[in-house]
Amino acid sequence: MKRKVTAVLLGAALTLAAGQASAEKLILKFGHVGNPGSLFEASVDEFVKNANARLGDRAEVQAFGSSQLGKDKELLQKLKLGQIMFALPSSIMSSVADEFGVFEMPYIVQSREHMKAIQADMGDSVFGAAAEEKGYRILGYFENGFRHITNNTRPIVVPEDLKGIKLRTPNGEWRVKMFQLYGANPTPMALSEVFTALKTGVIDGQENPYAQIWSSKFQEVQTYLSITGHVYTPAYVLTSAKGFAKLPEDIQSDLLAAAQESQDAVYAMAAQLETDLLQNLKDANVEVNEADTQAFIDSSGPIYEEFANSVDGGAELISAVQALAR
Image (cartoon, rainbow, N blue to C red; front, top):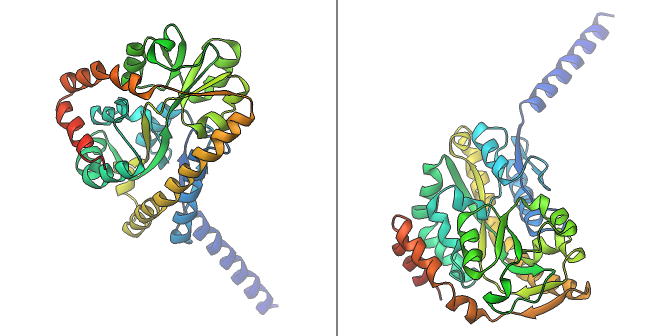
């Protein structure tokens, strides 16, 4: 009888110990706004896969997409409050620190190879430093992509075609200024609200990469897709500087490595999606046209001038990014 009691107590102790070990496992939440089928979802899933393979039983990264944990602005706040560990912001970073506004300049990023060169030369010294001044830390660079315009009014060939069109933009002052310059009526709005706004006619159109257009089902409520490629928006694997520093050093190292090793896969997926999803949009009976890119470039001078004159070091920042084009 004594042996049975001892065995039962030992079993209970082992079960309790296992439960405590499980309870001590770090759960690291990654919130993002990407819908199912989006590049954001695929990118975060790639990071989660690589991170968890490295972390083993010490910690687990869990992804929450479709704005489940909040829209971009809320996710940035939750990083600071320690309620989540990671987010994947894009255009909104121009509202966090002025330096990120350079990516809002029309046609400044020429290609993914150009973006890699920018990251290598300026990623830590300029953009990483700017993020840390605001309490954040960039672990890696992913992609939102080259942006194009959809609307229900007319094909957009030259900037003048945007006159009077109510166009959703992300929450970033330079995107608003750019489309005001082109003659549109820009309306900042969270991505999760755009489909309904398009369907009900609150806005006429929006601008996004193909992956966001398709995964958000905008093809169901938009008539025209104009291939403008007016802005390339990076996405940032972002965390709280203080929160990340509190993690054990081995976990920090594994997360950094996972973010960096995921980038090539993200860029490869992004390039493939550009081909596949454009065809999907055509097959969905969206009317597609090529815009006059040079006409947009010729109209963009004033926004470059304003950025150069209003942002401290803006002119030098523009020159540095342009010099890295290959």
